[in-house]
Amino acid sequence: MNYYVRDKEKTPEEAENSIIELFAVISSRIIDEVEKKYGKESFELVKKAFIDSIVDLISKGFKKFKKRDLKVYIKLLVNGVTQGTKFEIVENKQASVRFKFTSCPLATYFRKIGKPEIGKFFCEVDEPLVKAFNKCIKFERTKTLMDGDDYCDHHYFA
Image 1 (tube, one colour):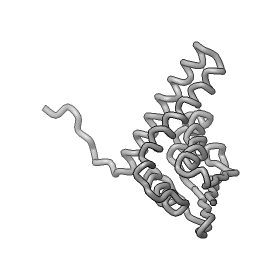
Image 2 (tube, rainbow, N blue to C red; image 1 turned 30 degrees about the vertical axis):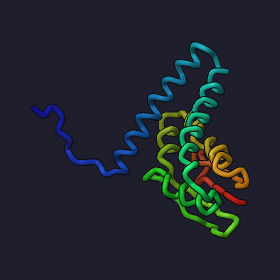
Image 3 (cartoon, helix red, strand yellow; image 1 turned 60 degrees about the horizontal axis):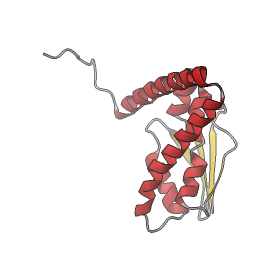
Image 4 (cartoon, rainbow, N blue to C red; image 1 turned 180 degrees about the vertical axis):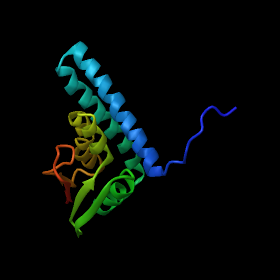
């Protein structure tokens, strides 16, 4: 017997957004409970563990690349963004690439539930991930959707 019938199939973007929303709610509740029990300093511990885990996990895949330059990193970045993320490349030079992100499902859902400070963990992964890929590539950002800005500006340069 089929107990579950879906009205319509979700698009890959809708399915991914559902997972992001679920992750935002669950992770926020877990972190809230940890903070209640262990205090505010536990937030920084959880953030560090999250960032370190993501960087460790993703950087394992970097080992397969013989060439680790800016061009390769940008290609990885573009291919790795979530489906609902909207961006444009506003500068594309050999030693400098600038992005303008105007939509990010992570920012959408973490802000929706009032927990951008937890969603910001994902933003704070960007710089250490770049360094793990190639210490000569630099990263700057002055605006984030997670903070309520109208876009995120990412600048990668060598």
